Image 1 (cartoon, rainbow, N blue to C red):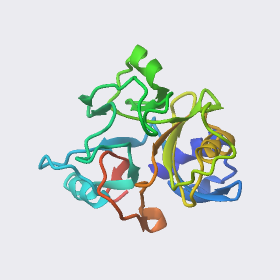
Image 2 (cartoon, rainbow, N blue to C red):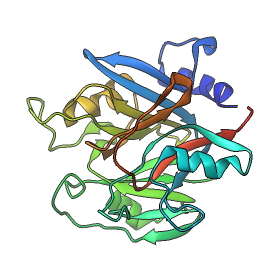
Image 3 (cartoon, helix red, strand yellow):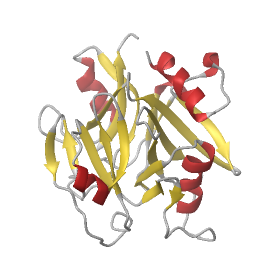
Image 4 (cartoon, one colour):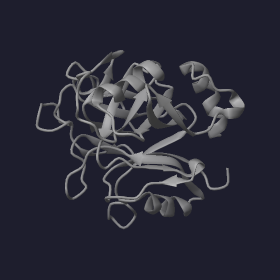
Length: 249
């Protein structure tokens, strides 16, 4: 299912891959920096957010999500950390899971990357997924099945965040998500080199051609990509975002 859904994404984003070469995740280079990009089609792929496990404890690890999915004959096709969280791993900003709001929208500026406005919300609906600037989201209140707020926005209507500096020296491994204008195509990106915000925003805008993109996190960034024989370890996570597929696709 995932392989078939990617064919449309390759065409839509002009990534220069044949249908045979299309895979859920790929390693790529842009401007001399290394990234891993995982693709999803929101019209056909099962994109979800995960926070609390069946016991009420937060999943925290990709393996815990996989263990819970296995009971339903499913698994993670790929996943990454899905937004900033407090010490108790509760979401810092707005969070919806399976239609239930866990945390309200936080519209105001604040300290740290999250409060570097404009920030945004990644909203997953039944047939589309969108990165939406927070104030726009708060005014529209789309019917999201899942949603996670983070910040800053990386790309806003095709423009980089106005506070990003081309000569910045602040470099970290970072991860984020970008969406196409029609909400059908989603790209999840993690840098494999330490990058600035300006560099990270440019891979979404200038390489992947996505008009909206959102920073998810930095120093805790992790990726689970079985197709690349990769599953990162590190700190326990709060929200996790991923694509779910049948255990035996």
